[in-house]
Amino acid sequence: MGSKEDLLFLFLMFLSLSSAFSSKNKHHKPCKTLVLYFHDIIYNGKNAANATSAIVGAPQGSNLTILAGNFHFGNMAVFDDPITLDNNLHSKPVGRAQGLYMYDTKNTFTAWLGFSFVLNTTDYKGSINFIGADPIMVKERDISVVGGTGDFFMHRGIATIMTDAFEGEVYFRLRVDIKFYECW
Ligand SMILES: *[C@@H]1O[C@H](CO)[C@@H](O)[C@H](O)[C@H]1NC(C)=O
Ligand SMILES: *[C@@H]1O[C@H](CO)[C@@H](O)[C@H](O)[C@H]1NC(C)=O
Ligand SMILES: *[C@@H]1O[C@H](CO)[C@@H](O)[C@H](O)[C@H]1NC(C)=O
Image (cartoon, rainbow, N blue to C red; front, side):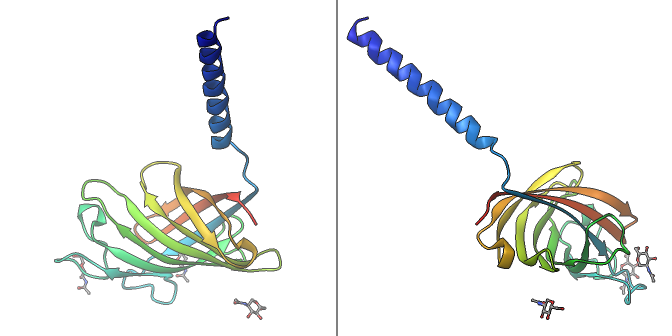
């Protein structure tokens, strides 16, 4: 082989190695996984004792009792929702999901989420922080797990969320499939 062909060979080797390396990186295994559910009961003017979330922002022409038309665009809700290990609202909570969501598209249902899981059980103590766009109509959507505290110190990853139940405009339940790709 001439030196030009040697160089080409080396170059091709390098390309195939680097692509193998990056695709391996994309599919590496989570270092920790966790599946949890949380339950959101939206205040509707009649369920003050039972409600776990409140509309705190509404577009002009609507109010804080009923979610607005136009796919709720412009509504913002703050929540303090129980977290459970299974999909039963009445199971013993293992923590609280606390944060906000806002509806942010005018012609379909999407939301933007920013919240924390605050856990205080014998298995897990600490918080996990989530952020991201939620295309609600999609069955499985990913949001970022941007960090944590306590048992989740310096943890990062992805959470796949699924709407596990949706009852009227009052109750919904999300299944959160957390995959940490960075643990400490
Ligand atoms: C809020 O808006 C809804 C829908 O337009 C209406 O039925 C309800 O009476 C309003 N509530 C208040 C407290 O203004
Ligand atoms: C966690 O629970 C323990 C026992 O109930 C309590 O003493 C502690 O203050 C709680 N910690 C937080 C951060 O809520
Ligand atoms: C609280 O809300 C949930 C969800 O809508 C409902 O299943 C439950 O019956 C309510 N409980 C009370 C006491 O109203």
